Image (spheres, rainbow, N blue to C red):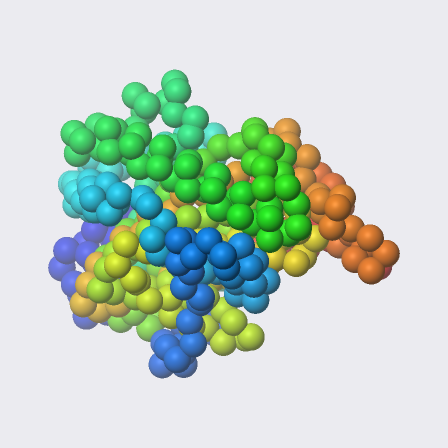
Length: 341
Ligand code: OGA
Ligand code: NI
């Protein structure tokens, strides 16, 4: 798998190797993606409106971008730079982190999609590096040591992302009509995972995908993306739309756990990543996830006669197990925990 990806990346063949070609019905139909609509852009300095704007965005789009968020742009650029260096290391170096063991905390991975025909897999045109970034105690020595600045930069970046997600959860709590510390208290036991997605250029982007259609498993995702190249698509009213990269902005999206906790008011929305011919793209996701034992379910204050609970209560671990079980398919994990009325 590693070998053919590298070969394809380096030599830019005129056609993809078969293991990367999606069946016709799963291809992205790039000409039909709308660039006339977009997800809301929210100024974090707009104190008067920020709570309402975030709440509305979570209800209508499940996605928004934030600007003027206070994270030093220089740190974000350094983070992009070290990760770009990482993905340009020789394949043997990156392969040290390749593993299929879901318990392994640090890994390099090639996402895939099962096609449903004889368990056949199609590999996505991407590679990712993933590892916890909070807590980091006890695993720092397992993180990549090349490039040499990697660990230092990731520690600083993870700290900033921690502050940002806390602030966002405060604003989201208020938007739900709860005390501002509600979600942070309720989700005190959490971890954050960093996932850096690398999408090399591709000779025939219409035959493949970078990441298959999915929703994010956790509570909230913060995404930093390369400038000058689009790739993230979000679904809105049945149509795909681009998410334009804006300088120094972050894309924020609602994950499955927040949809459940908000009792369906906030939407964990389908999205995908596509690739392009001329420019490689890199995105850095920070996923905020509950610890395995944390109980998740519709927040009691949001449930009443008019708004009956749409989901059962479960331990996050149960959800995660179901998520792993559906690996490779177009997952329907939340649906398993729905209550029927
Ligand atoms: C993800 C994701 C989108 C992107 O990592 O879950 O949706 O643009 N990434 O890389
Ligand atoms: Ni995602």
